[in-house]
Image (cartoon, rainbow, N blue to C red):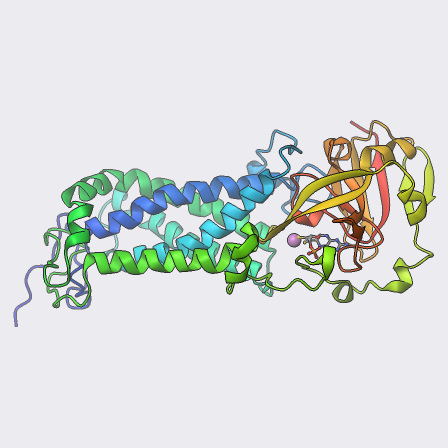
Amino acid sequence: MVLADDSDAQGMTSLPHRWRSPVRGPWLTSVFGLVLLIGIPIEFITGLLSYAAYDPKLGSNDPNPSHGAFGLYVFNWITEPSWLYRLIEGVHVVLGLVLVPVVLAKLWSVIPQLFAWPPFQSLARLLERISLMMVVGGIVFEMTTGILYIDYYQKYGFSFYTGHFYGAWIFMSGFTVHVILKFPKMVRSLKSRRLRTELRTGLAGTLPEPADDVLVASHPDPPTISRRGVLAMVAGSSLSVFLLTAGDTIGGAMRRLDLLGTRVGAPGVGPNHFPVNHTAAAQGVGPLQTGAAWRLELVGSERISLSRDELLVMSQLTEVLPIACTEGWSTVQRWTGVPLADLARLAGAANATSALLETLDASPTYISGSQVHARQSLLALRVNGADLSLDHGYPARVMIPNAPGTHNKKWMQRITFFEVD
Ligand SMILES: Nc1nc2c(c(=O)[nH]1)N[C@H]1C(S)=C(S)[C@@H](COP(=O)(O)O)O[C@H]1N2
Ligand SMILES: [Mo]
């Protein structure tokens, strides 16, 4: 058998006998490309905002010391509306998961391109190949680290925060070059066929796209799936991922569908029946430290300590606030306790510019002055009308509006207020 000349318009050869799917082609690739062109910038922006929400300028909150040239955060993270971080992180994690089938389909659709030979013939092609490596390596890295993170597997030899952050910048550099280089072809390809016609074409009518492109098989096999079948499979996979994970953050009845979600269980009962990430037992916190001898220490220009009963007779504030974990799950509850600003004033630090929260399980964090003074910030003693359960932070837990869940510290021990500029 004589193989036809497999050169494409760009003068490249792919391995002609290997890639035989008759549905692979620039139109199909461009459909996936368009979805990613919309989805990936949303991932990047929500991701950066999520890092900004840690207020990297504060103490040890930022695991990427000063972010180098990427420390672009010029604003203090805002405290209103209280639901914004929950939305940002929910979108980031759920959309990221929903895009996984699309990314896999896109990678499948361009396999001939990835193995094209010779790898480059000009400077422009070399640039394209390098950007392609950054895009493919970057997306696989971002997806893998993200999924491992929300599933608590962190046994790789680097910090998730550092890796996912710089990985995103490398990926986005390649992505930008890739989009600039491929955008005209994407538009041309999308115009070459009509989506509506494709959705009406079954297996029998499925013919390859014109053979003048490296993605199109030069020796196609007969079709075993139509283009609409491929699109339905990918869309169906994404929809399934959405349905099986989004309940983690949307809550309500959807939480029951949340089979792939990570926070299915809610160990508490009654008013304390909502998800627990780190249980008291897991964190080594027990009645010994949280019993009658417990006191909250406040440090400012003065140093005072308060029992839970003393906190309970102070003026109380009730706010409906979410816990929104970086891992994407969230839960909204009604919290009652003492405004943080009142505690700052009590400690002689009415103009606190930041505060250090220290806990019984030694997981300190810094919060900003605006978070100390925010209208809804409180040291919660009760939730939904009942005392906090031990798992939810008894005797006292800090709740801060619009902050990553990790800042809502449980089992509080000490708050140190700083008054420096
Ligand atoms: N003291 C203390 N507070 C904590 C944590 C913790 O491990 N210790 N976990 C944090 C994290 S990561 C989140 S998302 C929220 C909600 O977690 P929870 O469900 O364990 O309360 O609490 C935060 N507060
Ligand atoms: Mo978290």
